[in-house]
Length: 352
Ligand SMILES: NC(=O)c1ccc[n+]([C@@H]2O[C@H](COP(=O)([O-])OP(=O)(O)OC[C@H]3O[C@@H](n4cnc5c(N)ncnc54)[C@H](O)[C@@H]3O)[C@@H](O)[C@H]2O)c1
Ligand SMILES: O=C(O)C(=O)C[C@@H](O)[C@H](O)[C@H](O)COP(=O)(O)O
Ligand SMILES: [Zn+2]
Image (cartoon, rainbow, N blue to C red; front, top):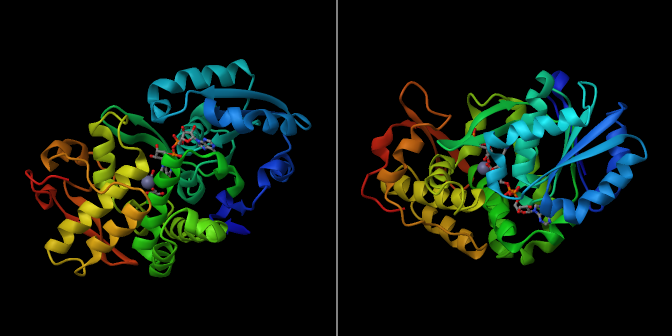
């Protein structure tokens, strides 16, 4: 399966195919004929796929590897100087290439390093987690976290190609299968009632086995369309942030150590829909449907925190405009809207 992201001079192809990782070098050769490649990965992913990828790449290029500890802590601004130093040490120049091999943490960090090192060098995404395959590897949002909030330093910087091999999900720990399903369910909620129904029928990730490539493709295709329409997040693209105003605040509240991103998005989607349904902004019964599907895919819907504890972080949401929050709400499953509001939408004493 092949999709083309049409963004003028920043256009690129996304390939989705089982076994694709085994011919990554051939695919990269189609867009890159330079001298050196630096692969950025994390220790867990590298242990499974790093050496065999480097072996392939070494047939054509001089290769080096930057290997970070796995986990969200590696997506910190404090990690960047070490990454830049290793790129310099390997002699990576503007005409060389970075390959991001890993989940969303690696993809976001390596993409931001690529956007900023020497004022920008090209990069390729090889996403290995479900979340990265359905969401983070596409669209060019690259970023690092600050202790004050998620993704607060970043750029819009598109990859030159995205290589998605669903076979690598066989080694993904169960927690991160669930985590990725948070974003998959998000796509159903905001834009694709049919996808939501398919997920509900399948009932669990194992039940989706026969549809996995189709589900990944469907999510990526929604993201492609949205990004083509609004690359820089000034309108339509904000819909992809459904659940994220609360999610990012929950992640920050526990210093990125407790809820994973997909878990926090699950909590955010359910809780904001619960409130908007109470306010009569969302069709009755929607929050219950979201809760049911999230739970069936092993995701949480609450985290035992008062909304008052999340407000400082929500003030830093990137969608905020002139002191007003822009919330993403559902009218019903499959139809989302941008709803201008303020912090009074979130009652201090409510527990989420
Ligand atoms: N840029 C975007 O548009 C975008 C979209 C969604 C999420 N994100 C970001 O993505 C990050 C979360 O990404 P994630 O959920 O992939 O987390 P992650 O990158 O930490 O990966 C999860 C865990 O799975 C391991 N792993 C990954 N692939 C594996 C594989 N195939 N086999 C074995 N282990 C594997 C990793 O080592 C890690 O321990 C968050 O920082 C979030 O903000 C960005
Ligand atoms: O691509 C987008 O746009 C998204 O909002 C996708 C989100 O799933 C993702 O978590 C993104 O990184 C959030 O962006 P942010 O601008 O809220 O930091
Ligand atoms: Zn997200």
